[in-house]
Structure formats: C-alpha cells, structure tokens
Image: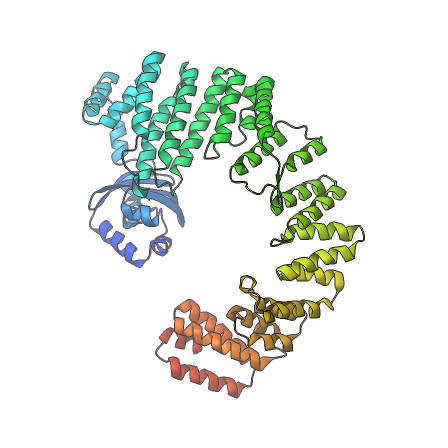
Length: 562
C-alpha cells in the first residue's frame, strides 16, 4: 500500500474508544485544518494541534491497537481526547505528505540542520538557549558532567537537585507529572556521571536525591506513581554507581540497612540481596550483625494474656525476620528459621504463618502443635478459619477426626460459616445439616447479632447444598434474605418449585425494567425466556402482554419482547 492511501488507525475503533461526541469534535478539528503533522513513522505519529492552546499529540500503534499522549487537560482526565481523533484522521488522510519515512516538518528540519556546519549548529543552539532557560540549564548540566571538576559538578548538581525537588506549595494531580519530569532531567545527568569517571559523586548525589524526593512526597498528589518511579530510578542510579566505585562494604551495608528499616517506602526492600555482589562477604556479614543486634532488642510478643501491643514493633518484626531469614540464616537450618517465627505470636495470623511454614518443611507435628496453640490462645476472639483448617487437616491425617470436628464446631458456633460447614459435612456426613441449622436458629432466637455473616443467606446456602428446597423456600420469605440468594434458590430449584421461581423472576424483571438501560432490558428478557419454560404457553403469553401494557413506552424493551 502506498503512503498516499495508507490507513494508520481504525476509525471505528477510535470512535468506540472516545465516544460519539468527542469523536465529532475531533473530526471538526481535522476538517478545520488544525492539525500539523510533524512526523509519521511506523507505529508512531507526532503532531501539533491548534486549539485553545497548541497541544503536542503523540499516537502509537496501528489499526485497532493504538495508544498515545496529549498535553491537554482532557487527556489527563480520560486518557483520550478530540486532539487524538483529529491527529488520527489527519494521519489517515495525509500519509503521503508526512510519509512513512518521516518526511514532513521534522524531516525538513533534520535535512536543513544536516546541511549546516558544526559551528553554525552551535550558534543556533546557543541563540535559542538565551531565551529558553530550561534548555540552557540542561546544556550547562551536560557540559559540566563532561568537562567539569568534581567540586564544580557537585555544587551545580546539588543546586539543581534541590531546585527540582523544591516544593513551595502542595503539588496537585495535574502538576505532579511536570514536577517529576524536572527531577528526571536532573537524574539524567547524575546517571551519566559514573561513565565519565565521577562514580563516587553519583553515589552521593543519588543518596541526596532520594532523601529529597522522600521529603517532598508528603506534599504531592502522587496518584499516578510518579514519585515511586523516581525513587526506583534513583535507587538504580545508586546501584550502578556503587558497582562502578565499589565503596567500603561495611559502610555501604550500614547505609542500606538504615534505608531498608527506616524508609517509608519499599525502594530498598531486600537491599542485601540487590546489592549482594557489591557488599560481598564482609558487607553481608555486617548486614547480618546489624539485623541480629536490632532483633535481640525486640521483646517476644504473645497473644492472649501476654504482650498485645504491636504498634511500635510491627514493621521491625516483619522486616528483621525477613532479613534474617534470607541473609542471616542457613536455609537448611529449619529449626532456626522456625525459632525466628516464634518471636512474634501476637495474632492468629502469626500462628497461621508459623504452622504453614512448619508444614511446608515437613514438620507436621510441630505445625499441628502451633496451630492448636494459636486456636487455644485466641479462643475468645473471632476464629481464623484458615488456622482451623490447618489443624483439622493435620488431625484428620493422623486419625483424630473427633478432635478435628470439635475444632470445627467450636469455630462454627462462634461465627457460622459455609466453608466451615462443608468441612464438617466431609467429616460427619449429611446429619451435620440439622445440627448446623439448629445452631444458627438458636443464635437468632437468642437475639445474637448475626448481621456480619448474613444468617438467613447462610441457612439457605446450607439447605440448598443438601437439596432441601422446601426448607430453603421457607427461609427465603424471612426478612433479611438477599435478592441474589432468592434468585440463586430459584435457579437451583426451578424444576421442582416452578411457581416460587416464577415469582422471584417476575419480581427481578420489574426491578430491571424500572432501572432502564439496554443491559438491564437484556437481562430481563433472559429471565422472561426462563419463565416461559416454567409454565404453559397461554399463561406466559398473558404475562408478556401485561408487560407490554405496563412498559409500552420503553421502546428498546419492547423490541426485545418482539
């Protein structure tokens, strides 16, 4: 296909993406000749669109698969805009002028510049830099990184870092990307320093930048994660610089350990592993020493009648245990790794994790002991179902089914739960249904607040599981049963209880039609078809006619009814 008739973007897909209104506005911009195509290359179109302001638009991809970017506010809000539409239409119509090989504005400029001498190009750039402070600053930084001495580079770059990360007022969502772009520009220069013989300086400046970004983050709306990206990039620059200069491994270990433990973000998560080749044996030994010293200062935490306040220690316990488990322990020494996990047993989750670790490492006897201890320690609290299930599985495996059932019943009586019921059913068979139903009914009769676990829905689920549909329909009339559960019952028992199912479907159909909207109409039509299979043709015809009489003004719904 020649450039003149090449179609870059699928118009129907674009209209579907932006909507008819936005597409029409973009089409008008295209007809009004507001688009200046700067360059078209395979899978990339760059253009300028004249609107309230002049907008830079970039489209990527081809056909139905495309993306892009625009400097307008609408794109920030929705991820698409009329300017993108205008550029896509212009690219489709003007491919011959802009060309696959990049002819057009950019190509003309490139050809013009290539004909100039180096001195002439330097003069042009310097003239532009006089009136563009951002360009002047970038050129100055690049020149310093190449030709300056360490002290001069450090002075200017520290000033540039401080200026770029400075926040005089709160940086809102719309300004965050621009703020981050300024920081990225400075980081571009810092990243080049190791390759130009300034690795030590790059290491120091990366640390300074990291601290500045962290301080600034509390005053930035970082919904799009610009700051997280900056922190990760700064860490990568720091890592590359450390590899280049090989700093003292002990001092590096101390700095990394502090950043991992005290940082508010996870940028230096598993720092010992990330920097292992730089730390070497000496640095890793220091990392272990620091972690062990901090670990020994932490008191054991226990639940029940023991120490329960974890506020001051939560992060330290989990972080230090992770570090010692990966850096400070022999992976083959399972007992030592179990011991690490016994220091903080202040919640059922800690016992669950400990029991799971023991079971994973073929210590099933220990896993059962810790699981049962956790259930006993926290017997007055809401049971952790997963901890119960571990204990039940291990007890059943060694033939203690009675003890397993006792754990399940104790948990079920505290907080009735369908998953626990299913485990009981596996152990005790169908007879468990009557006891479970009686347990729930007794709690409700005693006035126990069961709102958190939807007691009537739970009753219906249990009865439906056992195909006791008469009893389930009796429960369904009680106040508090959800509409969704009634419909689930109707679906499950339509063959045996068609009249009840029809009433539920008819009620749902009225709700859907009154909500309006094609999606709701289509769902209502499916339910109407289902009703048609549950009663005689004459009854169903009368029902459909009644729907037409009541909802005749809803034209889209009438079309579905035929």
